[in-house]
Structure formats: structure tokens, C-alpha cells
Image 1: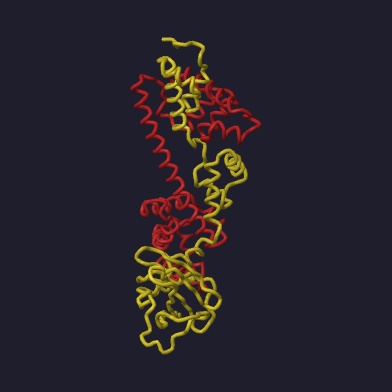
Image 2: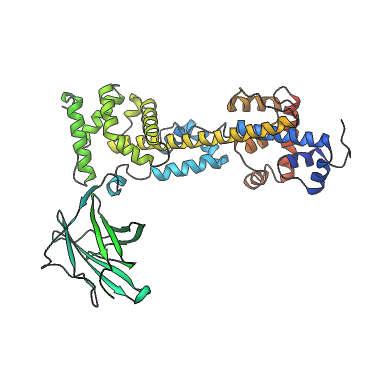
Length: 242
Length: 214
């Protein structure tokens, strides 16, 4: 069977259509020509199968990329892989990912990670005769300071409100003291509620932190230090009248 | 002196020293290092089991959500085990370097897993296309039992044309669009039309050959 309008479309036009790049006149012709429809379908099939069968057929295994990143490949092998990386954005992207993952000392990251940190639940000190006032706090406090202890860490918390009615929000103010020494500057503070994380902060050089914009609810607080995580659960915020 | 330690004693010391390290306290690497040496250089199964027990949780942590945890941890340790031998082990200057290699095995296992998932998705997509093509009575299949690398070598040999091979390599092996090919390799392919023409001619030749039918 022959094309119904011979010479109207070229083989390149049909190939372009098969790869999704064809022109509208070519598409109109193919729609009415069984021969060209079959040709386009044949090109599309071959294109699709080559794409599937050959995709990354020449890429080195990921282990080779990893050994390159760690300097374990001999020079000849390394040069071949570098030549491939110059052509292949997929491997270049994986190489970049590996370089990032392997950049730091391997266990050091785990010291600050939550999975292996010692999690220490702080206890509320029942009589607050010696509760510390958070530095820099101004204005009336909605509730008296609450003091928590965990190992050598003492945490004093108080909340303070702003606004009225439905616009009223609370700020949690905290002061962290570690056995009378300067707290670790930059330790991370995370606050969560039943809805998930609601705020984060970092300790300043004096052990202060604040988290603003809180609604009345029960919250949990985590203080993340390099080798341990101090947790304070069930902190009630906004339970005092406006 | 370390030779006198049993695997059990080394394992206890390794665990204790690792915990000290994670508490940011001074710690010693030599016990864990000796455990790794026995596992890798001596191929001591008990030392290997101790390594697995000591580091499985850390490997799991490195793996994150990239793979199903049990499968990923086992595959990463197997890769580590197969990849290292006596010569390679002696190139590690410290325990940190050994653990970095283990970490590399974790991430490369995850990368190969992702590649494999992508390949399966491509294959499923091809199978869908095949069903459509079959309905249209169109022939044109690549020899299915030939793996990708071997098929590529056959294509190169069949074409015997460096420029056409290069266009097909960048299109199908690397996966670049004609526009990306011109953009990344302007001196070789200054015009998109040239890429289309080279690909179409190459496909015609391959379809005429025994390699591609239809």
C-alpha cells in the first residue's frame, strides 16, 4: 500500500511525528493515510523500545561512582568515568549527591540526629520558689515560671500573651541553664503540638529562646544538644483568662 | 595485644567506644577497627556478625526512607562485604574512613535501587505501547533477550558511523532530547534538524537490519 498523497510529507516529518514533534499539516495527512500511520507507529515503536532497552546502558554502577568519590579508582578507570560524567547528567547528578552525603565525617552527623540521641524526659520541679526569670522578658506574665530539670540541665519556662479575643496569641519564653556553665550556643529548640511542629528556635549565648504565635493548646518541647535531647511534655499554653 | 581479644570482647569494647563517641566523649577507634579487620581481612564470620549487630541501626539511619529498611540494610552490608578485600582494607587510614566506605555502600545501594525502579517503570510503559502497536498490526521490536549494553554494541557495529552512533548514544543511552543534545554539544550538533535526520536514518538502517525488524 502506498501513501495517499505521495511527496506531501517527508520521512523526517514522519519521524518527528513519531517522537511527538511533528507539524500540524503532517499530522493531518497521517490521520488520513494508513500507510503513513503505520510508518509513524513503526518509528514510535522503535524509538520507544530503544529508549527502554538502552536507557543508561553505558552508565557505571553506583558503586563505581562511590569509589570514585572516595578516591578508590585507579587513574585510568577514574578518567573513563569522568569522561562519562561529562556526557551523562544522570550520573553527574548521582555523583553530586554522593559527594554531598560523603562530605562529612560519617558518625559525626549522628551525634546531632534524633535517632541515636539519648532522649531525656525533663521533670517539672513542683515548688517554684527558685524559678529563674527568663532574661529580657518584659511585661506581665500569664503564668508563673515553671521550672524543669533533666540531668544537669534546668529549663525555666513562662508564657506571655499579646492581643485580645480571637487575635490573642502566646509566646513561650525559655531560659536554659546547664549546671551553672554557659549553655551551648545554637542548640536547637523544637516545639510540637498534636498538629505537628509549630515552631523552632535556637538558644542564644545566654541560654534564652522564644517561640511566638502560639494558640491555646498542650505542647511538647525538645532541646537538641549534640549528644542528648531534653524533652518536656505537656506544656499547657494559654490556659489563663484574657 | 588486640589479637588476644575475643570477638565478643572486641564487640563489647567497640559498642562502648561508639557510645562514648556519640556522647561526644573521648573514645578509641582500635577495637572497632580490629573487628572490621577480622571481618574483612580474615573473613571471620563471627566478627562479621558483630559488625552487623553494631552498625545495623546506623546503616538504617543513613538509609532513611530511600528503601524498605530490612532489604536496604542487608543489601548495603552485602555490597560492603563483596566490595572490600585485604588490599582495600589496608588503604583505610582510620575507622572513620571504613565507616565512610560503609556509608558510601548504603547510598550507592539506594541509587541502584532507584535506577532499578526507573527501569521497571520504563519497561511497563513500553509494554503498554506494545499493546497499542499490536492492535495496529505494526511490527518493530528490538530483540528482547539482548541486554542493553550488548544491544548498544551491536547497534554501533551495525551502524559503523561515528556521528550517527553518537547521536543515538546521546538520545537513547544518555536520554537527552534533540534540543539538549544541541545545547550540550553545539560543535558536534549545531542544529536540531541534524539530530532528527541522523536518528531517523539510523533507525531506518537498524529496522532494515536483522537487529530491528518492521
